[in-house]
Each structure stands twice: as structure tokens, then as C-alpha cells.
Image (cartoon, rainbow over all chains, first blue to last red; front, top):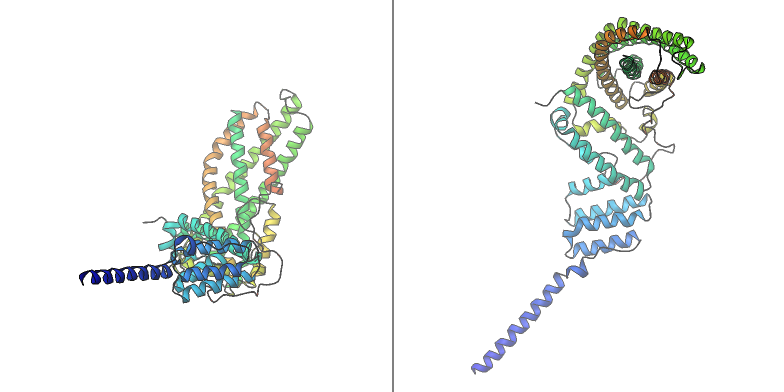
Amino acid sequence: MNTAMKIKLTGLVTVAAITTSLAACSSNPTHATACSLPEGPNLERAISAARFDLETGCEHEFDAYFQRLLTIAEGDPKKENKASFSDFLLWSNDTGLLSKRQARELYNRYFGIKYVSLVSDYSVCAQTCPHQSDVMRDMNRELADKEQGLLKISADRLNYTRASNLYQETELVLEATCEACGPIE
Amino acid sequence: MKIATICDWKGTRNFFKQLLTGCLLLPVGAYASPTAPTIKLFPTTVLEEIKHTGNVAAEMETGLQGVISQLDEQQKLYLGSKCEGNEGDPGCERIARQLGKSYLEMLNIMADKLPEMETAVNATSSSLEKRIRKELGQKKTSWTLQELLIGAESGKSAAASQPSLRGRSGMRLSARFSQYYKLVSRSGGKNNSSLAVIASDIYLDMQETSSLIARTREEISRATLMEQLNQSFGTITPEMQEVVAGVKAILFGEELDVMPMAIPPAGPADHGYESALQM
């Protein structure tokens, strides 16, 4: 009797273990297969693949996926790419991968003319001038991202030129303004 | 002794390059005067000071242009007479002395005009500083500052009215004047973004000019003495010829610096895709 009970119990435990393992496999795909970055030159197909992966356990790799999509888009520069990235980021917000603010900043960093590096709540004298060189360095990095987004991905030379001009003007005006604000106390 | 003189000439050349380009910015403010901008960077007091400084600068510029042309001619004569390497030649010595006299004349004009110039520049710089600090430094965040620079229209048609000249690099003086005039007249007095840039440009020029004037005034007495002593030698060195070439470049713009990209490529206004994420 005891032996029969033991066999039954062992059987149940085995079944439970197998079931648990199978369930784990379906909800947590292995890293190598599920989180492989999209390949190929087709942006829309790459975005679909990225969406699937990001929805099925690879959300921690969002930055890598986004960078890969940018690289793929460089292979076929056109104005429509801007809309594709906008849709992708909106989707990322809808699915909870990014906050609205993160999505907006990411989009504008690459495809906007204005510099998200310049977002601030306080006056130029109080907040920006004490970190003028850092601000300019951040803007310079953002200009490189705009070059990728606007020029290399969207073939939008006009807006890239405007972003570049804005950088130069901001540099000049900040230099004068911070000089006028006086030394940091 | 000769080397000291050469250094003075070089300093003077740099001074001219920066001072004169700065001076030419001054009338721009005067043209901007009727604009009544929303951002009050150029109130009447500032404009009056700019106008006055512009007049003083123009007087100095006129006086200096004459003597610099003379220096240029004398250098041509010196080179044309194959005086290089023939410093002992009496004719070459005579030309070198004439060159030295022109240099002394230039120093005298500067010594005469610089104090007034310095006062005017400092007053204008101080007024502009207050306006920039208040209007751009204290009333704006870095985000609203860039919104101002990019223009209220979010830049769709603002590109066409962007200034076509930026920076403080040397170029042909008349051309610089012309370009700034076009910039201001094109803005129609409503382009605050341009005014912010112009105000910044003028202010930084003023700061630099003020510092140069102070340094130059300190040097003038010494330079005059050195050149007076040098007159007894009557020689000209290759370095001095280089200075004359530099002076020529300052006046006639033969040494054009690379201009920053300021005008977008010609093309239709962008009415393309606008994302819901656009800031």
C-alpha cells in the first residue's frame, strides 16, 4: 500500500515538474533565441520582429533593439522612416515599455530640431550657466544623433541644417548670456 | 630692438583685425533701432550708445584705413625694389624708414582715438550686458531660449530669414557691413531670434574689443619709443613685411575665414511628417 502511494506521489511530482518546466519555457524564452536582434534591410519587418520580442520577455533589451532599428533604417533613408519610428515609440509607450516622456525625448533626440538636452525649469543664469560646458557637450552628442535620425535615416537635410544652425546659435547666445550673468556664486 | 618692433606690429595687426570687425557690428544695432522687439535687447539708451560708439569707430577706421593703405604701398615698393636681403642699400633704408614713419603715424592715431573708443565701447558693453542678463539670462530657461532662437513659427519659414553671417571672423569690411545690414533689414524688426544672436555677437565683440583696447593702450607708448629708435637703423625685416600683408588682409579681406553654416540649402519649406511625439 505504502509502495503504491509512493509510486503515485512520485508520478505526480514528476508530472508537476514537467508541467512547470514547460510553462517556464513558454513564458520565459531562452535569451539566445528570443532576444536576438532583428536582421535584414527591411525596416518594417525589423520593427515587427522587435515588437514581438519586446512583448515577449526582451523588454530589458529595448535600447539595443532601438539602436538596431536605427542602423537598419540607415540602409534605406527616406522621410517615411520618421513616421515608422514615431509609431514604434508610441507603441512602446502604449505597451508600457516607455513612459510618454521617454518616448517623446527619444523621438525628438533623433528626429526633432530642438534639443532635449536643453530641457530645464529654471533660468539660464541659475541652471544652465553653471554647467555651460556640460550642456554644450550634451548638445553636441545630440547633434550627432540628429545627424543619424534626420540626415542618415530620414534624408531630411533641411531640418538637419536647422538643428545644426540652432546648435551654433545656442552656443553663441549661451556664451554671451553666461558672460553677462557673471561668475557663478 | 627690431624684434620688439615686429612684435608690436603683429599685436597691432591682431588688434585691427578684431577691433575693426567689432566696429563694423556697431551700425547694425543702429539699424535695428526701429524694430521695437518683444525682447528688449535694444532699448533707446543702448541704441544711442551703439550709435555713438559706431561714430567713434568709424572715425578711427577712416583714419587708420588711410595709413594702412600707405603701409601697403610702401611694402609693395620695398618688395618691388628687391630690398629683401639688401638692408644695407641706401634706397631700401629710405623705404624702410618711410614704412616706420607710417607705423608711427598709425600709433599716433590710435593713441589719439583709443581713449574715447574705450569709453564708448565699455559703456555699450555694460548696457548690453544688463539687457542680455535680464532678457535672456533671467527671463528665459534654456528650453525657452532655444524656442526663441528657432523662431515662433517652429522654423517652417523662419529659415529664409536667418542671418546669413555669424561669428566674429575677419572678412572684407564692406561685405561684413553689407551682410549685417541685409540681416537686419530682412528681419523686418520682428525676428527676435536674430536680435538675440546679434546682441550676443555684438556683446562678445565688445568684450573682446574692450580687452584689446586696454592691452593696446598699454603697448602704444612702448611701441612708439621702439619704432623711434628703430628709425635710426632704417631696416625692414621679413616679419615686418608679413605684418603689412596682414594689415592688407584685414582691410581688403584677402584672408577669409571659413564661415559657419548658416543658411539652409535652398528648397521648399518643410511641410512633411509631424509626429504626435513632436516637442
